[in-house]
Image (cartoon, rainbow, N blue to C red; front, side):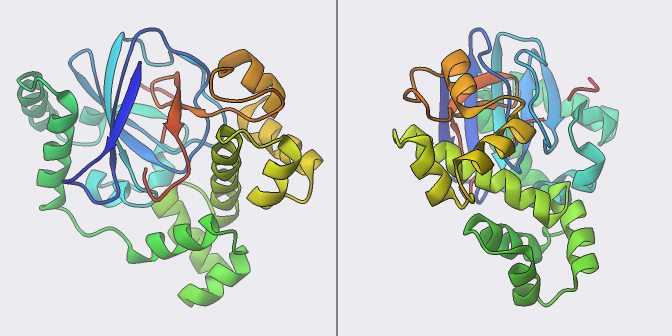
Length: 265
């Protein structure tokens, strides 16, 4: 079972929970998550490819998915340092502090609410996130080219790449590909055939969609749908991505809402 809701306390964030056996692989979505599982606080960094189901063991997960580019300031670490990783929060923050936070988390009947309050409290003591990140993500999400986005934000290609690495974990071109993949998944969930998904998501053609899906998801849209999400995707359509803990979830989508990612924990 997977459920999610927008967070009223953390702008742009999504609170989610998952119980039961994991489903399909986690696909990239440009986001980062704070996770609570088995009495542990972990961080899921931004993904560049699929991650296997059940990567982090556990039967019940709660998570706070941050909007793209907003988590690094709160966590105090550039996003590229967590790319394709899942790490213990104690690897990023002082262990006594994390131990105290975990004790408080254990008292919440709804762990998601505890994660929201943890993030809000921390945000009050953290530097604000890079305002450029929201503009870059919005431009790429709408299908603008990297050159067009760079011109709008007034940065050269190298400066934009460096700022994007810190904010998103990878450069703007990769972020654009990831957001386009999520756009395609969202269209496919509406029951559109692959050819129309490819056109409306901004791919050159259906073959381009298949190549990009294979590169970012490790399989083809049809094979992913058949293997992992027949309930959400009609035959021949791409399927939804999974939650950061390694379970398939129709809610992992490209919006201004917030990722999943490998484990060092």
